[in-house]
Image 1 (cartoon, rainbow, N blue to C red):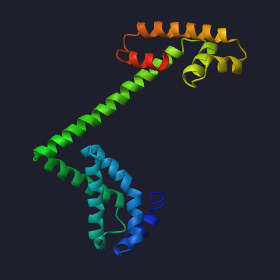
Image 2: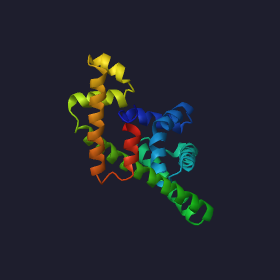
Image 3: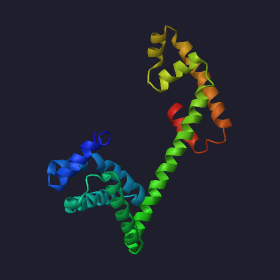
Image 4: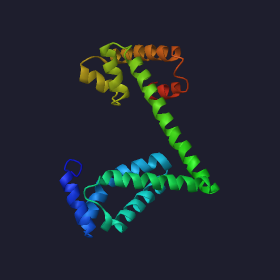
Length: 198
């Protein structure tokens, strides 16, 4: 809302300079998530990122009378946020306990990104394996594994015999196992495949 209407933001800043609590709240609600994400990317701590955002808006409130409605409020709050993040990281560098905590969280943050990338790769390999199945076999397989339907339910829904479902599943599993065992890139992901499919 604010971003698409510069005049609305200017009006809110003018109202803020006069001590209007509602204008302050609107600006806070609009920018806090972006500032929080920005802080989180730097300090890798939810608690500290939230604290920094609170400090930023505390400063905005204290300095409200000197705000210029013609300035870019976004640039203003992001500059304050960046400076507070840098100040915090400098403090962390000189505080052993804080330094270890931030380092640990940075490692955890990096590891979670790494896990996400590996899971994405695994999902891609999984789809490649499924593409080895004929459309009919894939349909039966996904009804069994993704929708947790029994062979009886699948047979009834597709109008085929239970033995046909059983045979198609057996052939599908053989094809998938063969693909998985030949794919050396999967590594530990094999366990996930067997857990989900086999």
